[in-house]
Amino acid sequence: MNKKLLFIPLVLFLGLVVMFMVQLSRNAAGDDPTKLESVLVGKPVPAFKLEDLFEPSKEYQQTIFKGQPLLLNVWATWCPTCQAEHQYLNVLAKQGVKIIGLNYKDQRPKAIRWLKELGNPYMISLFDGNGMLGMDLGVYGAPETFLIDANGIIRYRHVGDVNPDNWNKTLEPLYKKLQAEAKNNNTQAEAKTQ
Image 1 (cartoon, helix red, strand yellow):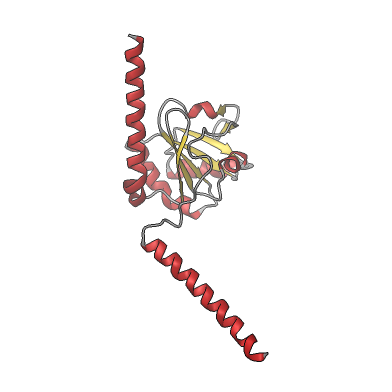
Image 2 (tube, rainbow, N blue to C red; image 1 turned 120 degrees about the vertical axis):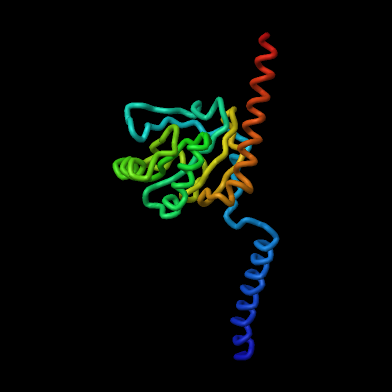
């Protein structure tokens, strides 16, 4: 009886080792452990009505995501990784990348001060103080970035910071593809009206 009890921890330990090795091999094969699938990919941004971070009397709805491809960046002042990615978002905005910020479960005065001190890469800053839009988007935490096409459809979800590596390898090619699609659709629409 005692010998059987001694083998239980050994079997559990070996099971953990096997699970660890499987995950390591998946990571080595290129699987991204930060990539979380989203049921919203391929669907419109959920309906919402949120205040502008800087001007609470100004409200926005999901229609702001129509017209051009853009990034929706979920961020907060309490998020250290958001601070790490912020300077790169400023670089992208200066290069012409369209970014809407979603300040998630934060305090408005802190968020405003943060953007004034560190720069504001966002063409629009939404305030999601209670996190309702974040929950509707399936946000696990900040930062998360959604790539949205010109029709307001979520095309990709990135969990973690946006940095030169993942921008160049994944996000930028998708963003440029969506820009080309939008330009092609606009050209076709103009041709039909002539």
